[in-house]
Length: 268
Image (cartoon, rainbow, N blue to C red; front, side, top):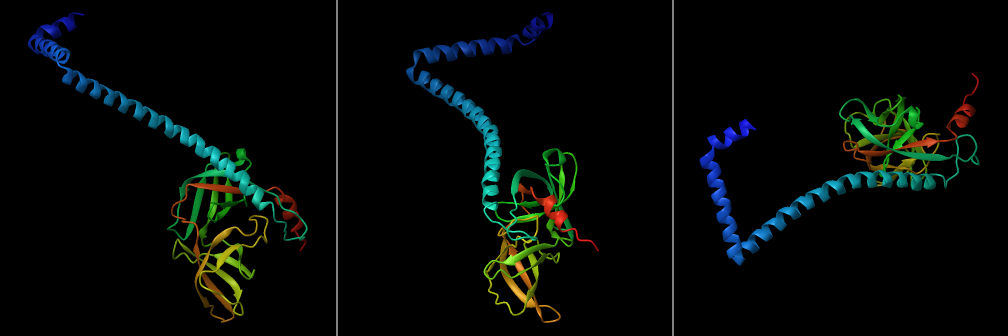
């Protein structure tokens, strides 16, 4: 209390000025309609700005929640679409079932020879190795390591990545790999030189594995050439996905994975 009193004594001239200034402003506003209107408008503007800022913050957090719900709903819809097709590497009448889990990209590399992606889903979410990862535009890669809360994805931009894909128009299939040169171009190999190719033709997953359903988009043919033996094409595929800008992805779980994998275990 003594310190407050000392403050007023020390700054009595300034305090007196503020008091007189406030009285003058008050008398001016009371006696002039114009000044009252200006003050009211200014007050409304300030209060409106504060409410607007508060509402924007509230909407932001609401959108985060809505975005999560939208991703979950998209997962259900995509799961239904994937499950409309029946196919298998073992028996054409064996039906595969796919569930999708939305995930967020925590880390993504794309400029190295062997690139990986880290997602915020792991064993506690039912995520295991050899699950495929996609976006709404196309494939991303295959999970190769998992922990309790996270998983690592072997990106399609990895020299060790090998994914079975096909030409959508002719159904000829081959292996998708990466030559480590461009983050937007991957290579389709093992297509016979007798196959008719056209720039712009679509490439999709073949469905000849238990990781990806058939017909998930990959990209389009941007160029092609014959290999060294002149009997197979090396096809450059321009990806639908921008692998340098990934945020939300879907993890594909094949509920029949273990059963199909066991069927593929042949005795040597």
